[in-house]
Length: 216
Image (cartoon, rainbow, N blue to C red; front, side):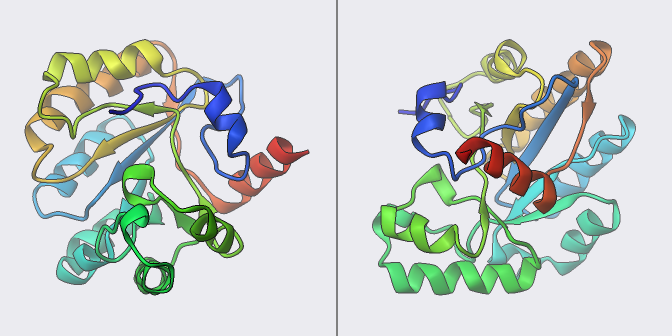
């Protein structure tokens, strides 16, 4: 069970997380979880390049270690990097101390203070500790590309019907989602570009500013 559009009341319950960037500008923040993966991530980069788009890649540390050349390609093309734990751990199923070490291991490889917990799952004490060291980034819109029950057309509709200025949108640059991504991503880029949107990357300063406004 998951929500395509994160309700405002949930965002309000966790003001120290970043769910979207408050703005009236026509900008979307596309994010990609679980890479870097050969063939998949480079294909994503090529699609983004065609629209002069920037994005944020929440990388799994083990994949950075296995595929450093793909990781460097992401960095060299000007995209932002985030931490998605070293081994894609579910916080709800993990003891706190090993989880913290796993996050830190990935942070050292990714060289980033942006952090997105796999599955969006953190225990309260995990969140309390991690938000002292990282900017925890969730999302406003899920494409649902990870869901085998969803068609590629439904995934596209999830984004087109729910994204708005400042939305943080989740995709996955993984083997499991490759086929859907090939259908959805070019169409999302084309649809929103035709509406006058541009595609930005997340950065620490902007997230810090957003968090200050959210908790004021």
